[in-house]
Image (cartoon, rainbow, N blue to C red; front, side, top):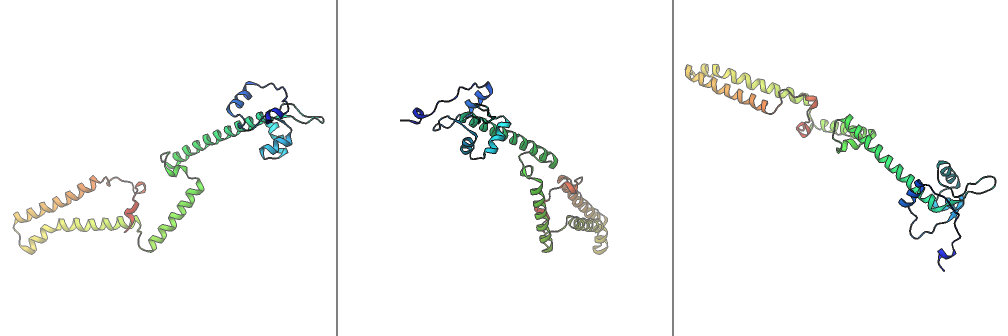
Length: 224
């Protein structure tokens, strides 16, 4: 004899359209038969406590028959299952929506694309990464593998000044030391001017002339 043949009859219960939709979306598993239960039995079925089931009833979980004055609540298993699954699905949808909005705001604050890993990090995770980066940078600096960008720029500027002054002074120096004639001096001056112009053009092509140092992404270029 099958379970269906021995199952007790169910109470006649009127269901509204909302519950009917939940039952359609979240039916009982195929191997589970429907049943009318008390709060303790529903608590066992869902692996929770009677107090929690009581809270669910207050939150709107459907009942087949109200309890009170010594009469126990009667709860239809399929109704409780559908209500619980629907509530879980709503919570998951709400959490996903909120997480998406949080990611959008993080991306906006950080000035990064939404699919960037930085947009998915929490404030705590970003702080921990920043602290780890600072410790790594300090260790590299102590090993002389990392140099302050300001020091590098000062060095490059001083080297550029030496090159410029040397090239500009070269015609007069060659005239004195090698006794060049005016035509030869003019040729040296022209060659020097061409060299300085080529250097200036290369700097301009690299778009460094108006670059903001604080906004530049130097990456590995700081490693010396």
